[in-house]
Length: 420
Image (tube, rainbow, N blue to C red; front, side, top):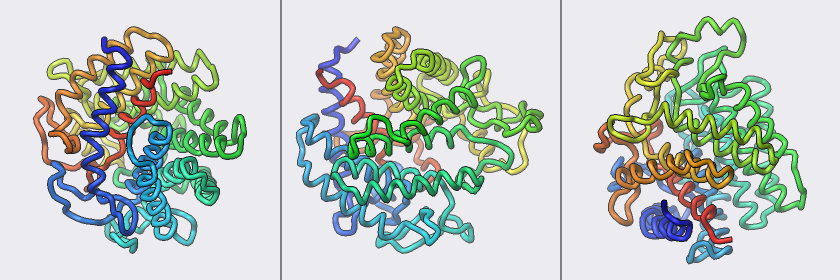
């Protein structure tokens, strides 16, 4: 078991010597934002298009880094991060919003609208809107910018109204009509948490409206998607009529990476509420996801598994073809982001509850992750590997190399392991 001081030093070094040197070179210092159109190995920039999804995430990262510099968790230039974050905020505010208040999914380098899917329109994923809220909220905290907070609040209200009206899209893998996705509750929980932190910090409120919304979405995950065997289901029917599809691939498959990420959101919220029951349920679901998702043959977390473990199985659902194809063809790959999410989730669970199993899972994940994914010093992690851990030169979901998951989790680990 690594002691807390050594673990803290390890993650500080990994952030400052491994991850940041790569992404500092990818910043658009002229217009704002970050270039993510690298080949899978990170060696060549193939395009300079800007996915709003990634720009919102980058704004969150650079704003949080500015805060970490101020808190002396890392030794770097806070003003540089804050200046680049401000430029990114202004780029997003100036270019991403459609007349109805929704966010465009894809822009050119200089902010012109661009369609990712021909004739599909510009507003094709609610996730992009959510990451813009999170980025603006964190920037508002870092800069004390009331305009950024108000812009984030306005967009959040618009997102909520679209969910209530059932008018949301989730490209590139849409959810068939009549079904609900764990990912929706999950992203809204995290978005609500980010906005709650900003609103509470900047207004002095002890508990904001957004904190209550976060608790609502945490409850949705634990009550609507967590089954009696503590498995977080990725897709569920919206009504009893859809229960006939229980044996289909879409309803049987589990996503271990999504689950462990979602559950640390839940654990953080349960800890704030001092809700021991919810915290323990989240820990049970975390351990269940790791048990079902772990590849006993080669190590690491499988991308998708069946509800009973092993390869996903089941019939198809009309309207779910793209999603089902993805599950069948990539279930046994090992992605970089579930492993970074698992590291933080397990360590957080241990710190909050003292659960020895979670510590053991952390150690197991740490060994596999850092023996498998990092590249040479100053290079980003390779995004995807085959079941045996060999690199695959492919992209995941979007044609980008995104800085978010690994860097965010490393930063959170630095904060978690900082000396009292």
